Structures are given as structure tokens and as C-alpha cells.
Length: 134
Image (cartoon, rainbow, N blue to C red; front, side):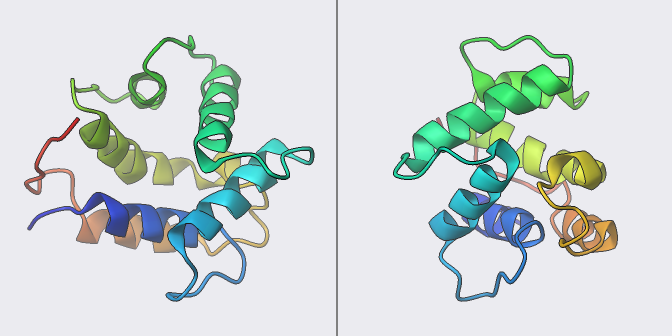
């Protein structure tokens, strides 16, 4: 089974954003998740800047060292082995960070249960083939 990054991102963010539906655009899911995690003051900020701020905060809160490659740092901080490929590191993160739903979610009480995240991890197992891409 091939793992598609956009499908995995949709499942990961959708499980963490209250009121998310299959029709909610992925960038809207990301924006809502990031601003919920980071707090106010990010209106008009690009998705890329929000993602960067989120990764910096997440890595720091987990006791990791923020480096040049934030996705590699995020993979390391959850106890996984990073690769040379950006998209592969994102896949590794999304598959394994779901085990830490309570601390990742900006509003865990509003999010679906961790069991939804676990079922997504089972259906998209890390052993499945994935095409690494930069």
C-alpha cells in the first residue's frame, strides 16, 4: 500500500480540528490547528510561517533542539529515525506523533479520541511503501 502525504495530513489534522469534515480544505485544517496550538496573533500569517512557528514550539516543548531541518528535528523528538527526504520525514511524524494526541492537540477535549488516531496509523502503516521525495 502506498502512503500519500496529502491523505495522511488530511487524516492527522482532521482528527485534531473540531468540526472538520471531508470537505474542509486541507489548508484550512492546518491553519485552524496551528493557530489553536500557537494562540492568537497569527491572523494573516502564511501557512508556511504557521507551520514553522508550530514546529519550533513543538520541538522546544518536547525538549528537542531546533535545527535547520525542522521536520528532521520533529521526527527525532518523537523518538523516530529521520531520513534525508522532507516528505518521508513528514510521513514518519504524522504516523508516530498521533500517539501523543493530548499534548499535540490545541484543544484535546474538543478533538476526537486517540483511538481515531491509532486506527489511522494502522491503516497507513509505516512499513507500507512510500516514495521518498524532497
